[in-house]
Figure 1 (cartoon, rainbow, N blue to C red):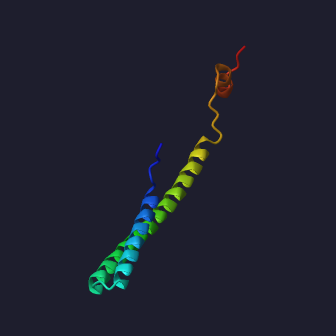
Figure 2 (spheres, rainbow, N blue to C red; figure 1 turned 135 degrees about the vertical axis):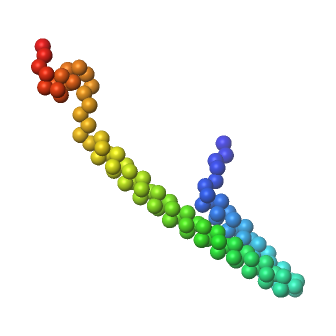
Figure 3 (spheres, rainbow, N blue to C red; figure 1 turned 90 degrees about the vertical axis):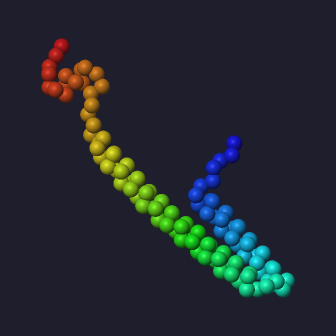
Length: 102
């Protein structure tokens, strides 16, 4: 069964593709092709790479914030249920209410 890629894995794959494109552009430049067109492509690819890196950093920050919030909510939930004395049977109900019975 194939598993879905995470957002971070997709971003990293995009970076790899961009680096491949940059390598290809450099190789073409070394072969003597028009360098101005290649330089424009390299600039565009570097801008895309910067955008991907920025998006990745933002996602990591959001993940850290969500993890912190999750921990806070779990702590609050645990404190709400701490000392929960819900009776499990009729005898415990009677004892909780202070009712004596035989």
